[in-house]
Image (cartoon, rainbow, N blue to C red; front, side, top):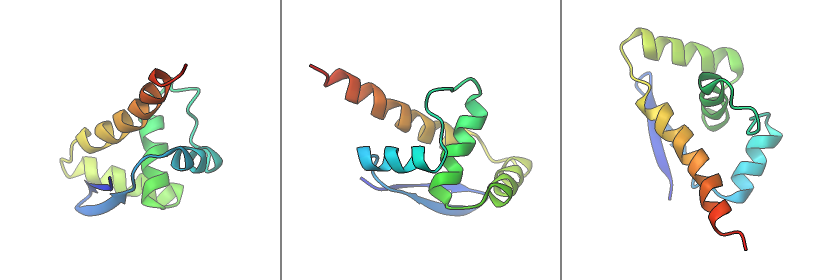
Length: 93
């Protein structure tokens, strides 16, 4: 199911997470094996789904937080990605 998040008063569509989406994220540079920085991981996910370059994505998030925006939407998006992996692990035989 497609969802959306609002960052800096802009709506970003988030497609349903599927295996092909995760592969595309990895190819685009999202690092799933080293989540030592949750902020960096959330940033990478936002950058991928927003289709913004690094500088523009950073500016969007800076303005979002400077204007009192919360981390909730990014946190939920990060949890959705993590839950994809948890769900697929449960289906292992």
